[in-house]
Image 1 (cartoon, rainbow, N blue to C red):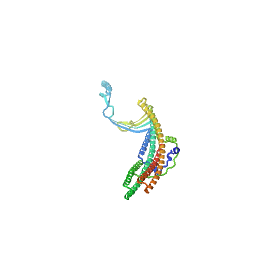
Image 2: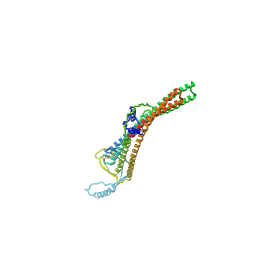
Image 3: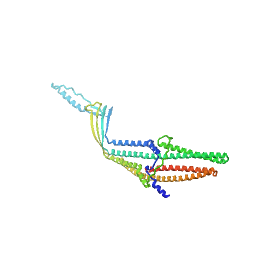
Image 4: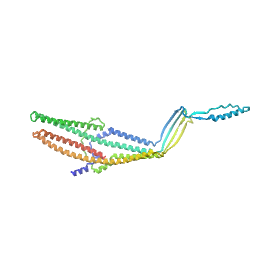
Length: 456
């Protein structure tokens, strides 16, 4: 037994290509990958992340915008213009000079200067407009660079998330398919068994009418029919639920027909358990996703640190100003600016950097934990498949022995040397053995799918 186990351990581990799934099942997997709603949502999330990455890249480009403003103002602040205080003394002196020189006939006649008042003017003009075209160009901004890297990391994480779900969906579809086959086989088995026990009931009733058996034998046959009918009802329910869940994964009607294909499997490839664990550590995209998450955390730290670096932008404006939209030589203007911004002290930003560093430590621990979980998953699937193989072997032996026992009891029953209880018990043993073998075979296929997913 130990040598058989060692041989199995050397041969049972295999890659995805080592599986030979039926064409029908592979077509169902392809249909699920194209129509599953949850996978479509994952794909939309990935497309959204690509759009966010394009947005981050576009931040390097200049921005060109048209801006216009038209204002109507009433009231507000005023400022005084002391023209009266400035000019009235001058006017008084001029008037005095003019009055003294009027006796001279050669002196010209000059009207008298009147007194003027100080002026009060509103700070806001009653109407004003400004229309301009603004060009904004970033020259140096480290935050843009790190933000683009963060978006790229997020996009890769979403892409891997789609691939991980595709593999999970593939596993679920295959498992659901084999569960449906298992439930379908159980129903078929109970259908056949029901025919046997109903035939036994008719035979028993005939024997009772001919006074060959007593009434208790008829009651026992009727009870056996009821037991099988109850088991058949459960089998029908299990089949319907398995069918509904499989069609749910394919986004089809719950009662859609499922094709059954019992294609044989091809030989498997050999891998040791250590090689399988190593390959799982290389292939499992969950680890790759965490590595991108770690890179994102590094860029997040750099992004926060970049807030202490200077930012340099160029701004150019061309437009018109005035109280109306009349365009003339004095209305248009051009203004060019170089904007420098440098954050010298920002205490909250320092706390953000510390938080980002702690997040990075958490991700490193998650990577180590995930590696251990994947290794444990491979081990569980590996030895689960070994146990399933042993169950198939045991179920085959049990069915073989049960069939031999039933043939002997049935022969005696026909010859009148065995009673109905013995015959029913032998038939039940065969039924149970067939059911165990079918379940064991489909469980073995399900374990193959589990191991396939654990490695890849």
